[in-house]
Picture 1 (cartoon, rainbow, N blue to C red):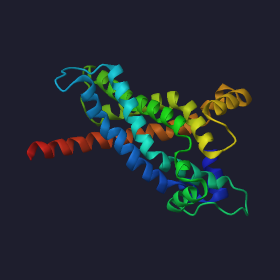
Picture 2 (cartoon, helix red, strand yellow):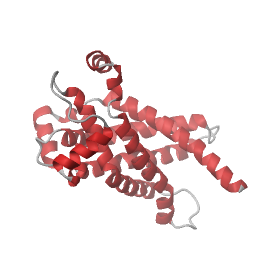
Picture 3 (cartoon, rainbow, N blue to C red):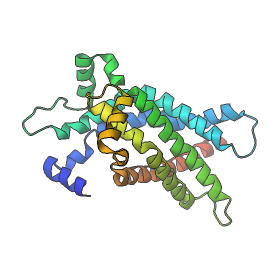
Picture 4 (cartoon, helix red, strand yellow):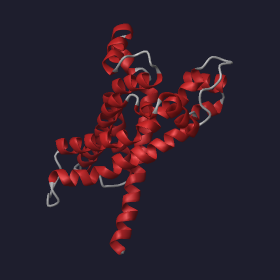
Length: 245
């Protein structure tokens, strides 16, 4: 909360939404691909004739694949989001490098080359594949487990519990990779992913990889609850439309 107040006071309230346009670009592309491909990939892995509960390792493998595929396509949007959010750290009087998401894409390509949009792709693939597995596979598994408890049904309360569980798994598993990814994208001082990991561990200790755990869980916990609630309701609507058509 102290960080929120400080940012709002020093940079203005709207600074809390820095990078939101690039964030929306990212979610439309990355979110659409990772979530939209998850069920079809699961079906491919187990076979269309499979009946019963899909094994956890198949869910994890499917989520790893879809997370990796999605972020390869969406990496430029992630890079621009991180760069725009880092603008707030510039000293007073220093001119901004970018004047919006579209300007950031053009400026990066012009000054650094097209390949620069995929800076940090390695740690980003690792991070997003693992976090996607933690979110989607854990949501599936937690929901499946809850529904086996007498009295629980496939309703909004179950979706909220499963979404919170998915958010907790995602933060616990993905935080170290998230820290390395953000540092790689926002600072060119590191040679590569391993160099960033080693320097962070050496100079700041293991807990540095869990800096911002509470705001991260607040973000991912609420994000997962809203996302899975929306997804479940959207699936019901589309399935109903397909059925009646």
